[in-house]
Length: 244
Image 1 (cartoon, rainbow, N blue to C red):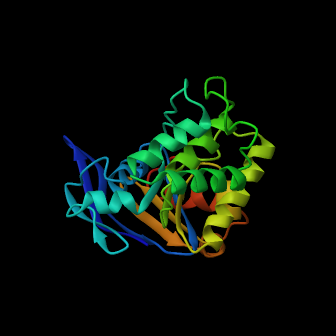
Image 2 (image 1 turned 30 degrees about the vertical axis):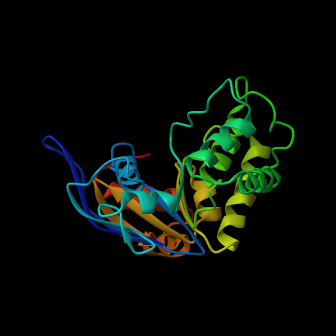
C-alpha cells in the first residue's frame, strides 16, 4: 500500500506539489491523472524516492520513504517515463542486471526472468539485443526489469503510451494480473479509455492539489457526464481550464 500525506514540493516560487494526499491500496489499480504541469510527475518522483519532498510523508507498506528510502525501493517496482534500456544488452541481460542490483541469487534470477517473460509474452525477444526493439518491446522489457525483485507495489508511468492495439491488450491483461495477485498498482496515463477500463479508483491532480479521488463511476456521476474524459475535463476545468 502507498500512502501520501500532505506532500509539498516547490521549485523556487513555483509550487509544483501543494499538499497532495491520497492512498493506493493493495489489490487495486489506482489511476493518477492530471493535465500537463499539474504536479503529477513530480509527485511520482517523490513516491519512488528520486526526489525529496519539502514537506509531507510518503509511506510504502507503512515505511517512511524519508526515514528508510532503501527499504521503500525494495518494495517498489517502477516503470518511469524514461525507459532507459541498455541497447547493446539483450532483454534477458537488461532484466538480469537489475536482478543483480537487488542481490538476487542465480537460481532466483533465472526463475523470475522466465516467469516475467511468460507473463509478458517476451519469449521471442528475450535473447535479442534491445537496440531495434519496438515501443511495445521496450516497455515489456522495462516492466520486467522493474518487477524482477517481486515488489508488492508497482508504479507505472504511461505504460501504454505509443503501444499498438495488440501490445495494449497484452499490457492491460498484465496489469489486471498484478491486481489479481493482490499488488498495489499506481497507474499514470493520459489515455482515458484505458484509465476507465483498468482503474478501481482515480486521483486527479490540478495545480499541485488533489481535486478528485473516487471510482470512475462515481466521478462520472458527480460531474453528470457519460464518459471519463468529459468528467476529467469538467473536474479540472473549474480549477484551471486546462485539457490534458
